[in-house]
Length: 167
Length: 167
Image 1 (spheres, rainbow over the protein chains, first blue to last red):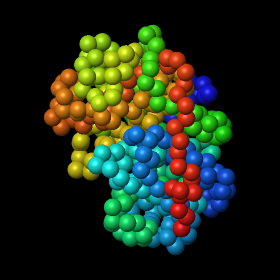
Image 2 (image 1 turned 180 degrees about the horizontal axis):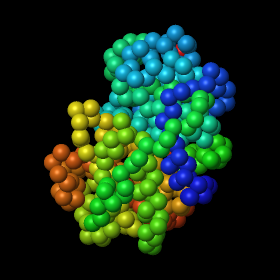
Image 3 (image 1 turned 90 degrees about the vertical axis):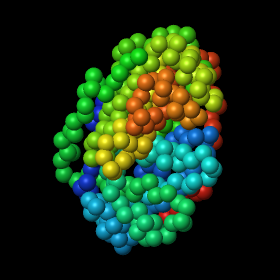
């Protein structure tokens, strides 16, 4: 078990990281990140996902070019494309893969590895680069690398009293 | 910081809990769960969300009745409705609120509090019960309570070699 205060501080201290060291992440740590994703819950435990690990520098650079501000994908030690697999009419794959991404981000942070959720991707072009099928849903491409330079300042959040209602 | 092995085990050991003790969760622990959600990342840090804390027993029971298998909402100490607020044309609110829900589930688990992601909700009826606006997106209602009885057995996951491709 994890002490609740420790976990809450950990969650609060996590940052989005966009600058990576030119240093390879060992296989063991990559695997821990994939494992954390694998153990996310999903609707009816369907696990409607696939993880594509991208280590090839050319592919990382190609992906970087089809994002709006994700140039740093090109400098990652590796990236993981999180792919949703629509399997039933009850399609929870966007939510389920999002849960995966949160677990992966937290796992990376505990390893001193940075990542940043990249939203502005030209998904059609990224799917071509990744050779995905037409029905595959590309949630995001998470780039991972050891943190380069100072940890960015905290980004603020709305206080609880602005976002919580009680009934 | 959290030891990576500890975090991974914690993520693996989390379970969905559907049986709750008839025991109130203190304010401080409720607040920690809300805080963990509040610190989730979101696209451009827009935080397009609202959390509705439901303690009223009648409302909890009404909500339970508009779910497919969420009868245990009626027995929760409280529930949190996670509501997405579509704010821009770039609507990441489903993903962003999903990240919130993962943080809340993990935070609860560290406190010995169980929850279960409830998918099968009649969202239109639940929105009426919660008095939500037409544009509000109800992601889910997470019921929280101290775990009653034994921790459920592990639900399996596909092995990594079934879900990971490397390029």
